[in-house]
Length: 233
Image (cartoon, rainbow, N blue to C red):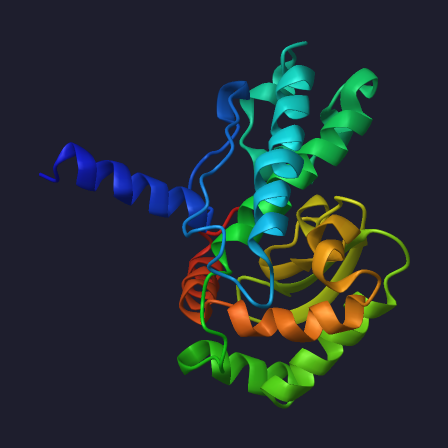
């Protein structure tokens, strides 16, 4: 039987992969960064990481808690199910839930797939990228172009279905493919708060630099979880 410390680490790891039922029963929490604020430098400066995680993401969590405090059957669902069935959320809080549940899910994924050393994917994930995009370079180019071309604030995602097929999607604001019953393999935040301190209005430069901090091991774990039907957020 694992020690309390080991058990907590295993639970934290599962939660960050999206295997947990975050939000079930109306409980929400800000996940800790799995690395230091400066781990993604020079691509992303430590002050941006601190503000982005400790203030922006925390705000989504607090506002989602406020919406959940009003009660309703939707609060008993895990986060990914709430997002997939927003029409079941009372109209009085639906807009708040859409924004803040989406922001919570998007950012929880975002922290987990960074903190790496970039490079190229490998194994089954690399094979899927080659199959669906022709090459990793093709994927990176299409992803960067989609993110740079998104008007206003939003996200660019790589989606994955249960057969392992990949695609690229963009969403405005804090919307997510989870709202359409899809699964997110990884994604990048192109709100200005994600990059403005370092890059100002040069979003394309940020998108190119971001690949140097991707953690392909984490993304490969998410890919296998999606194929098993176990990936949630």
